[in-house]
Image (tube, rainbow, N blue to C red; front, top):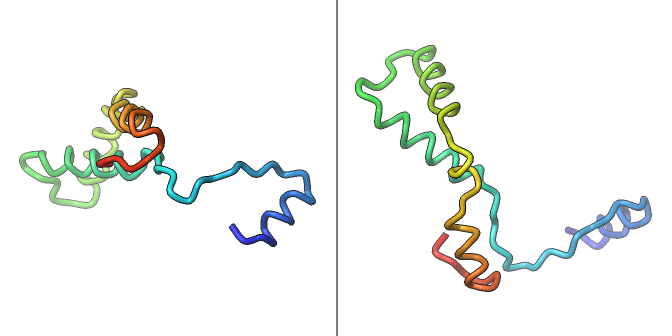
Length: 88
């Protein structure tokens, strides 16, 4: 974030969190997309139309468990590495 952005947010009473440059990204969306892609590609037969694909993606999305979303292994690895590099 630029120094101007930090100044602007500060002058407008918008709190800014300190963010370490090498901090791990715990945002689950990339893993969720990978999981969803894998689940869809496992389907036999694969969807043959746009509507079939939409239906399959929605069905597989609804099947994603909270455990998958929370990424417990990734969080544990980050804690173990004390915020340092992990295989994720």
